[in-house]
Length: 203
Image (cartoon, rainbow, N blue to C red; front, top):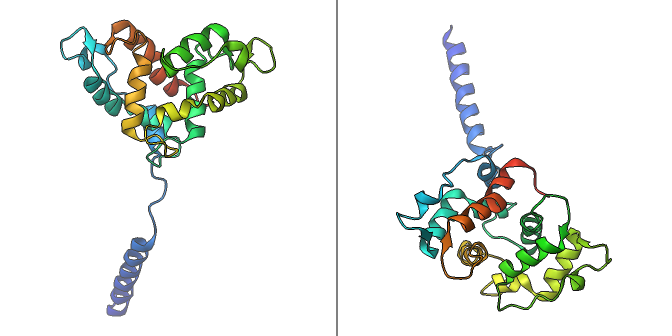
């Protein structure tokens, strides 16, 4: 290689390096996709710290490690908005994955998401077309009428932060409303809130 060829090669390399520094990173993994494909340990005993139950502190750590929040934060912007909340809550409420929420599914889910002291009406109030099941539009309208999102959104800013989400999710997983999550509650919630998000695309 001549001196001129070496000089041109060096200039080309410098130019490529400078160009590369100006190009934004592409094809970065989406946080929600990473959460769906991740396989963190979901075993109850690993989070109960030797107890027979999980308290809110243990739960918050588990939710963070399992990246549950990322599963609900579909656009990866660090908060969960109303549409994201509705879409993912519908998947949790639709236990049998039929594409609609039947009366028994609605009753269990509403009691859990609103908690016992919160009013959410009767199934007929939600079933606007009286066909004995709820589509996602009916669920969304039910959420709006009963202000469910505002129950979860502690500071009422229109978004759920990690802390708000973890606090309310704990209450939803604690179906007996005793301030602790036992093995049965954990197993049911893992299937509804974690495993199904890894098996199928978002509804």
